[in-house]
Length: 166
Image (cartoon, rainbow, N blue to C red; front, side, top):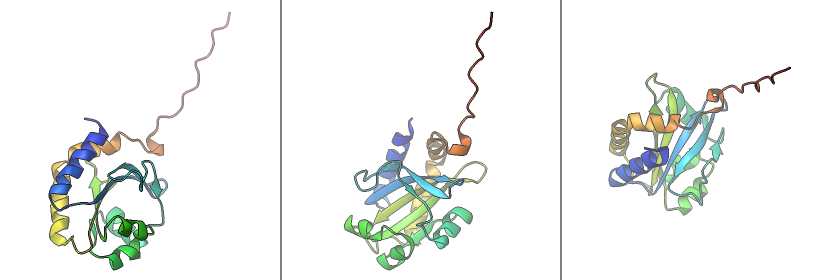
């Protein structure tokens, strides 16, 4: 199964419960402290390959990347404190976000799934439901993120083979 299909199946599960308007799968690139968008339900507004760097607040990074815990912003006020693109998020009808880190077998963050819905829609129960969906799809999600190597994981270029001399 290709990575888009894994992310699409995860989106469909999340649409059932806890619900989602906007969904993105973001690969964590530790070399640049950035998140690269690998999948999105809204490609016009959030193009594939786009990156978010330190526009994300240190508190968010501390929770999701360092502590490896889900992040919940249940309303627009909390969302605005963390995301620079809160105006676009609001235009899409969203006012709440859940971000859940995806951890590999060595407990490293390989990616983050972002779920956004209407303000007030998400509670702690919503976070627990989202974590449950991710855990049910965890092996496939880790593979889907691994299918997109980060710069440090790219193979070293090899020298061209030497030409035979006569």
